[in-house]
Length: 135
Image 1 (cartoon, rainbow, N blue to C red):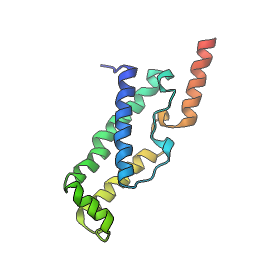
Image 2 (cartoon, helix red, strand yellow):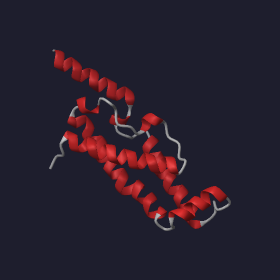
Image 3 (cartoon, rainbow, N blue to C red):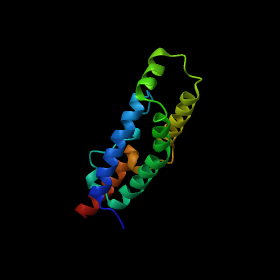
């Protein structure tokens, strides 16, 4: 069953907010436009959105889920202490979290992220759609 464009965009918005909040909380840096929903997303064709939707859902089920499962190993208060006190970088959970966050970040900034998350390709797709509508 194919999802509607509205459903895909709503789901993607929720996932992007969750992922970005975690990355910010863990002080993982990515460029702002590497994982964002374009303002003009509703104007894009569903077949342009669909690969991004599937990629993001897969990211959530694999890399993001790995980070969440590691975070659940310890209470949040302990993670906060580890970050603020320092000196815990060699603890097993910290090493596992650092590796999982690196995998998540690499997937987000990698070249094979969908065109939907690349500003120039979104702009080209919008121009093509505009030309079709005026022709």
